[in-house]
Image (cartoon, rainbow, N blue to C red; front, side, top):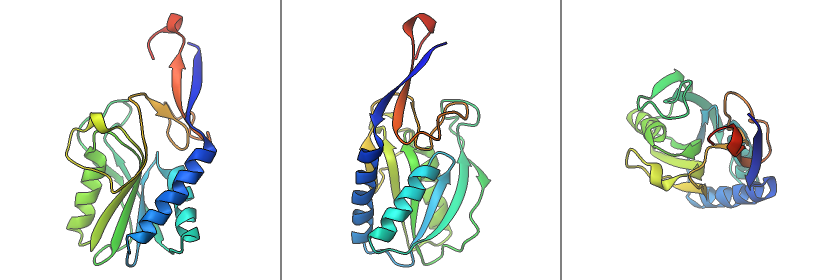
Length: 182
């Protein structure tokens, strides 16, 4: 199988958008901000966004939560499971959930409901990519990097079979027509 990567959002476009997102988040007037990166796919985006938040004048604390609705598949199972939970107390704080892609919405909705149930003052959401036509639950992100066409994307932390996470851009994996479907 021969695979090609077509760049969807290049590194400089992503960096520029991260600065814009950070400015919008700073303008939202957060208190005792706790940024929670939803692992694994968001780790590169979250790191760059946190640095952009610093440049925008914020000093958030940072946590990580690992949730799974995909397991080994490329399509959501529908059931969200906590693989690794946060350690920080969220009660009375503003929480910013950072995720790589908002597709079905199940994972982000679950995390948002979880933080609200734990007493967060406010739960905001920020996603790098949004596929608005794939929603299985009603949720909209407060901050969206880019609208994404309905393609399987990799790079900038996102993978397929643990490959391509290291790429500095978001790309679409394409398989030659003679070798099978994309």
